[in-house]
Image (cartoon, rainbow, N blue to C red):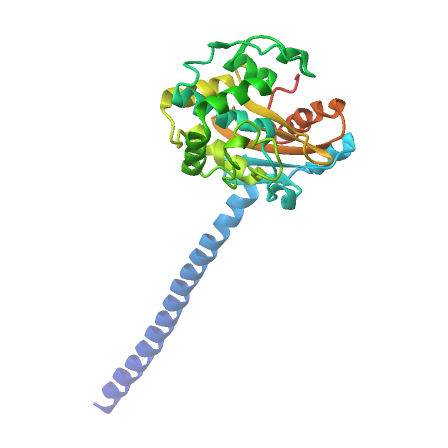
Length: 300
């Protein structure tokens, strides 16, 4: 009887030890699986990230160096919410919009009926000005292309001080300062009155593109259309230049947006200018910067 009890006790002790061993092994196995799974989950994003192309910000400043000019550029990639820029401090500094204000001026003129459409002609006043293209009768579309100052001065006078100020306030354009009624046809040309930063230009252009402005869709569509500078099967480039002569040095503007690859790229460029020969650099620097981002046809 004692022998039987001894064998049973030994069996139970052996069983408990084996059970303990299997339990420990099982726990270690489960822990290993959990740990491996955790490591896998942590490693997976790193693997995905390593396969994703690295976006390197191009050196946009070198284009200004190539022309030997000081300036700034800001490009906003709306789809990827990414900003590319040169000279951030200048991009946040307000200056007079000069002829880039023709975008806003055209919106007001069409909305108020000052001009019924983009082809209605205004008669030239006969005063000879420094740019030959300004010295003839013209319409909204051609005057925008030629940046005919007198034409848009007439539009501003016809719209009137009160209506212009109301639209400026509604949109929140720049610092909203248009002076007095006596300044109605030059407030955008004088550094001490209406001012806007390149960053604010981008925001205004975004709202124009989205139709988020206090103007009818017809008005917005017409202005967008007259802003077209280049159109190909691959892209559409809209923009407006400006030349501020009330500062030393003069400051050139080029603002607009590029639609390409189912995306929209908004841009605002400023450039110190001393003479008329400097003017084309505003556009060329912008084009080179956009090409740095793989945009525009390389043959242009």
